[in-house]
Amino acid sequence: MEFRSHQIAVESQGFCDILDLTPQLGALLSREGLQEGSALLFVGGATAGLTTIEYESGAVGDLRAAIERLAPTDLHYAHDARWGDGNGFSHVRAALLQPDLEIPVSGGELLLGTWQQVVLCDFDNRPRQRRIICQLRGRFAAA
Image (cartoon, rainbow, N blue to C red; front, side, top):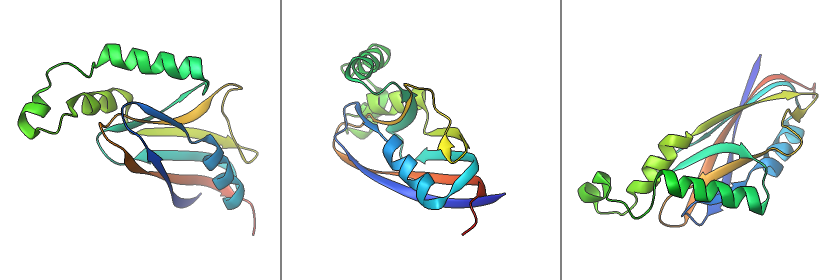
């Protein structure tokens, strides 16, 4: 099994900004020639997470609303009292979502469902440049 690590950089606006990473991942797979294996994704930082969803305005809006119900922005968070940065809600949201995601690859394609896309959710209270580590594992096409 071969391993190849890459980074995908994106600019986010924070406050539950949800960005579709699927096109960048597809381009990376094509460029690297991964045929069979998996793509392991990880976002560094304690205020963002990765998941999959149908990336359309209704589902994205529903996800934002559900996250607000789970960890509202206007609650008291001990993190804010200690650090004064006002992003306690973003740490809780990121912990609920998780920073990593693994997707199987076959025939050079991500094995996603018909309406399923890979998304980054940035929960911080300010714009950020996010770096997603993508480790491709498996069998690559011969060069």
